[in-house]
Length: 141
Image (cartoon, rainbow, N blue to C red; front, side):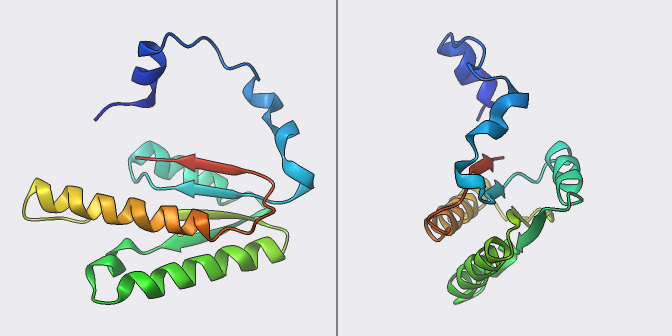
């Protein structure tokens, strides 16, 4: 496991070609977007809390504990995609975020398996996005 900056360093990438304060010019068609936040570390949680205070966003919490229940994945995916589409219909950016409570497991293999299930779920959420979103931002963990 490593931070994204490791890849940037290993690939000898220079600074981003577009400064962060100019990224808004890449919003497609003035449409709202989707922000995915799968990380539950303290800094990401603080950033998420600030983002959710913005007037043009709507939070969509993904209670990942449902993945531990029989049949929970299907209902969780359907609910999440529905809420994301509702936010988009209301001209709001959907901020889809995993629950902030960290799950505990008996061993590291079970923890990693659960992480894979969460990642797979979030990929299916992305597949269910409206086709004409203005942007997609993803923050992993």
